[in-house]
Amino acid sequence: MPTKRKSPGLKKPAAPKPETTAIEHTAPVSVTLFDYAALLDELKVRIRTAQVQSVLAMNRGLIVLYWDIGRSILARQSLEGWGAKVVERLSSDLRREFRDLQGLSARNLQYMRAFAEAYPDAEIVHRVVAQLPWGHNVTLLEKLKDTAARLWYAEACSEHGWTRPMLAEQIDKKLIQRQGKAATNFHRTLPAPQSALAQQATKDPYFFDFLPLRGRVEERELERGLESHIREFLLELGVGFAYLGRQVPLTVSGREYRLDLLFYHVRLHCYVVVELKGAEFKPEHAGKLNFYLSAVDDLLRGPGDHPSIGLLLCASHDRVIVEYALRDVHKPIGVAEWQSRLTESLPDDLKGQLPTVEDFEAELSRLRR
Image 1 (cartoon, rainbow, N blue to C red):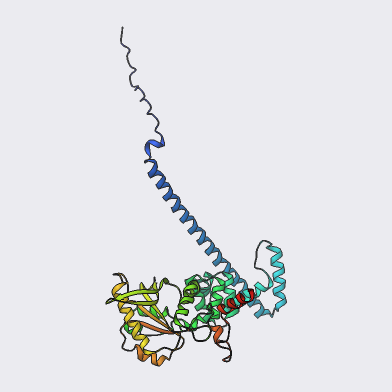
Image 2: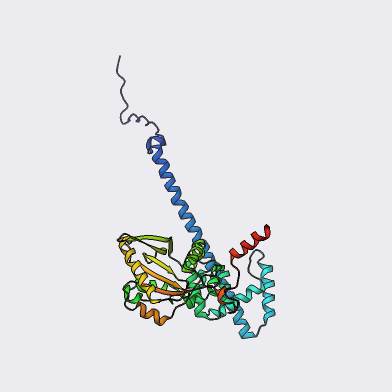
């Protein structure tokens, strides 16, 4: 049989390769599921971050808009003598035009005017107060007259993430006057900038309004009360304190000693020993706390920890006596008062006469019999 000749110049097309499935080119199922879960988590984080950034950008834009509206109203009233009635008319017309937009009431327009008057500098608006929600800014306007104080609380609010009620509470408690005011020896016993950061982490006085205190208070009663209200206590201490325990045992030379309260400060990277006194500060209190700090540094302090700090909270103290007591102490110690503003606000003849929660419970038990 004659052979069949191939056409010149033509090549036989290559046989098509079999299609490959996704399974043939993927990792084993378990690894694939793991990669998918990791990708899903990563995308969730990205989306949430974008959402937060979008909300923050919207908030900043809204605050700047309110400031601009307030500035326009303020300028017109100053130049043309417009009265309060014009604000009401503006509110009515703007609400009619922008039916879906909230915040255009006459009252809110007045707040916008006050907002622009309080912050004439656009840079301050963009850098500080535009970082806060409008309700926080209204609280600052209502509760504070001094611009420097408003900016201080605005920056603290941005740093600590306070809610509006928390901001109002810190203003009512005059935090700006108490922050960093404890009597300490930090400048001598801690290196910079640790000493400045530690000083700023203190207050004087500390307010324990959440405790039902009256009359002379025993240390153990105070400890139990603070532990049972640990959330409120941590809020009063400030940002960075992590609670580790009450009556924490330390064994030194075969003898057991107990710390009233032990914390770790995550920003200062150190242990904080809090000792409580129901009476006035005495010089010997500093010596005892100095001993505790030496033991904590030897027994608990790790390689990455800074020197431990002591905080002595007393019912009262004389700053001159505290200064003498701490002058030659080599461990960092701060001394401050604790107060219950409820008790402090009562007349002297009524202090110590209010019934406690236990008194109420006992009386109720008697009446039920």
